[in-house]
Image (cartoon, rainbow, N blue to C red; front, side, top):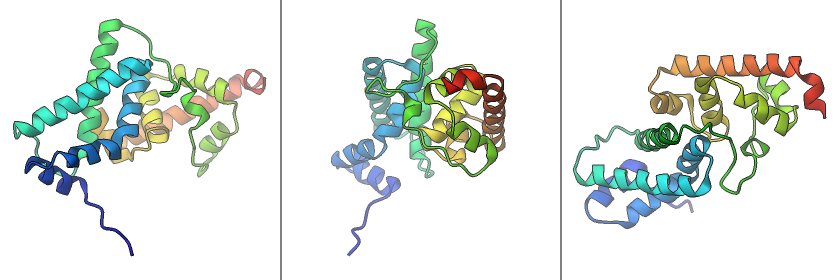
Length: 194
């Protein structure tokens, strides 16, 4: 028998009526995605943990003030808050972000790419370390969409909400990211084979 699982809106309504466990459920549900979105920018596990906590403190504060408008976009809203706090930290420290996971492993070592077209197929076959170096060379907007899509596992609609752009813009950034990666891979084929 399949157990009924409450959606985000139901959990939010229950939280607002005093059931604090519902916020714990929402945090557990989206912890990996939100943490990944933060870590991609700050590249420090401890700072990412602080920003993660600050993100959900802001979420709770906004909910308690009644300023959240329920429109079925809880995750993109939370990721936008996390991204903004991360970018604020990045601007304060003026550091260039590196891309690793919370265990200090290469994010792209675990990244699963859908080999549905030739660009993605070429990328999948390349060395993970060479790929990481190439991804660092992408323009910030393209890198962000690529990471949110393939590591954060967000839909293009969610990415568009997080990046405050249209879905077509998010799709275009992904397309250009893949084209640029393919060109860099072809230009540096010898480097990636080592």
